[in-house]
Amino acid sequence: MTAVTANSDAPVLLDLPPLDAAHFARIEDKVAALMRTRCDVVATQGEALLPLEACIRSAVRPGSTALNIITGPYGETFGGWLRSCGAEVVTLTAPFTGAVDPQQVADALREHPAIDFVSLVHAEAATGNTNPVAEIGRVVREHGALLMLDAVASVGAEPLLTDEWGVDLCVIGGQKALAGPAGVSAVSVSARAWERIAANEQAPRRSYLSLLDWKQRWIDGGRTALPHAPAQLEMLALEQAVDRVEAEGLDAAITRHRAAAAAVRAGVRALGGLTPYVIRDEDAAPAATTLRVPAGLDAGDVVSAALAVDGSVPLLAAAGGPAQEMIRVNHYGRAADRGVVLASLAALAEAMRALGAETAAGDAADAAAAAWAETVAG
Image (cartoon, rainbow, N blue to C red):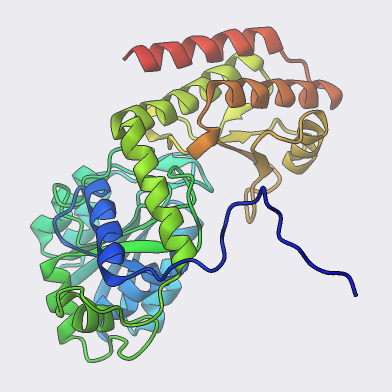
């Protein structure tokens, strides 16, 4: 029998001391500061789809009317959950090439005065767009509805002012701009949202989807006793990710992501062949840039050829409807780096050339470098 020995160079991930309630609460407080909220924050022990579904099932009751704003695949998912809760769903869909117009939201609320819940994704990494939450939040609050925001792809990459924008339920994850773990997430819950949830007889109780359980067993008890064993490694990794952003400076992290997005878009325009999928710069998400391939080429073929040139670059073909025409360039977290952006453009240039398209790789690199410097300089 061969003995199994531990790798002495590997980080110690086993036999950790217990993560106590006080440490768990400190991590939640750090996340609340990052989200710019004074509301209750619960660190949920699973990927961000867990609190997103929990928010909808907790706050939406049978017979209610919800406005679901779709600018990508996650908005489509929310619609299914809302209907399964017995809500009448009003759908507002914006082209994936841009953002939703706050006036469209205001018009939908005026046409459907019974709307009491609005679901919105801040930034869709899958489609590369971002929505004007501040303006949307204002019209939703004036209407009196609750606003749920998926900020998984935006936190750490662009401003997230949860309280100032009037967001009642805000969900984040650690795996995008924070460069942290995917297996733990967090949700902030406003006082208005807690009131709605408590009054909803259909809200999950004694369930992994129950926000009420966390409130009654954790928050109302002064956060002194955890309701169950925490996901210890993921919680510690989330804390390190938030600490790293604080050490860099949130404004600096946001600028770095904006610079990456600006550099990719400028570089692609100079490269030729490919074009930004999101048309206006102000609608483009800082966490990821989507690109449209020219007619006659398949996005999957372009990505495969680029990865054959450099397998380290963060490129992938889109899924779903736009799969054949859309390439996604991730530049969140550690990939929001000038060198990574330039390497991604170089790989795309080689791929396009190999597939018979004319490109200007040198012009792309110069344009990207200039856009990065201009953004950083402010």
